[in-house]
Image (cartoon, rainbow, N blue to C red; front, side):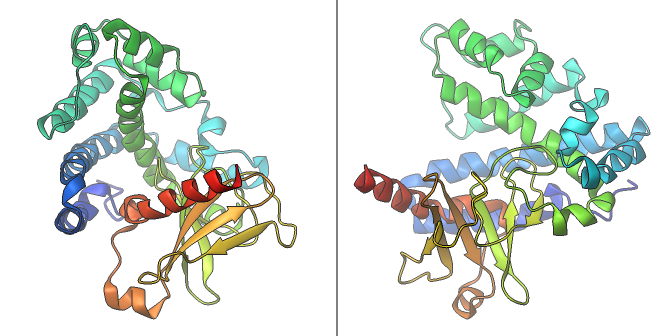
Length: 307
């Protein structure tokens, strides 16, 4: 593959699997969740690889890169400049097969597909639902198909929403990889809270390098970009005192919980330059959201107290 020089999820998967095993050992209560995640990452790696191959075979890598270069002056995410995902990634048969692969992989590890009237798998397998329409709607911020899917089997919408997100992640990740050579400016100077590739918001980031430069990391496509530490990625305020941070874990001082006093949002940052963190060892960034899950609990407790 022409893009073989880029790091794909398949290249990261052995390390991801190893760390999920460590998490399982340390947190037996959530062992099944870690197994589901491992199965999910494995199948997403295959989908990402096929999606990238489809872009290459269609000769669209340069077109995607050309669009990515426009981000600097249009100041909108790549997915908007492209007008959605490229056609090879919206092929119904490819999407349906990929969704079934995800469903089967997570179900084997205990993810419930049960609805009150049928399995979540049924509408996908029987083509009673357009997966390409589902993807298109989600990219536009609509959930009509999610509601229809959940309603068809009388299932919880959150479970359906999770399956849909899990399908979109490797598609957008492949788009990011395809555009990678043209994203240099974006990584350094985008400085918006929304992901410059897919437009998603994120609660995860890290500090690295001289001066502990802060980066945000998209939880959907995996894009990473520099973001000012004193600015809220949600409302954009950078007034002194609006953004504060806490280090609530005595044993893991490298985990920072940032909070915006202006809009009430929070986000989680891993200080990769912390000496204790280096000695302890840090998981791959794909797992930072899971690794910092305890900070979500702290943030929720703080919010409850304020209310």
